[in-house]
View 1 (tube, rainbow, N blue to C red):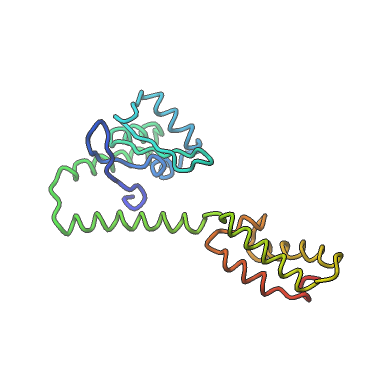
View 2 (view 1 turned 90 degrees about the horizontal axis):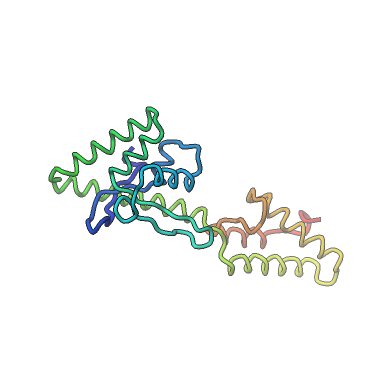
Length: 205
């Protein structure tokens, strides 16, 4: 569980306290209710106070996605909301962590704790990198590559070139298993350019 619900330090009510990402708790508890609805319901039910029990920040300005970091007491209350065994087990986990935090950690224990936190951060960054959408300049590069390829294959045939434009994206989406070409992950931008460059007229007509 400690590899799933990462404990960090957050400033609440003027003090640095142990906290957890509410989204991690929501995921671990396997809650069916969408996260925004779930966290709002919890805050209203238990009268949690921002900057005392939790802090929040917008992590995606386009969608308005907001993350919540909650105190250990609030984390336990969130678990109790579910009223099931996994919620109770998770609540006990947080209680155990609180007891451990009162102990003085040895140097090796501190190093291990830091390493675990770094590993989780690296894993999250890797996931974000793999799912990040194309930047506008990367999408333009794909369009330019497609136009260049089509022109090279049919420089003076408008009817043929029109069909090749469509066929390029059909083959592109099929190759990368995409509903739309611009949903290619940014990390595969160069791979997409290479694929377009490799297309031959024989496979496009």
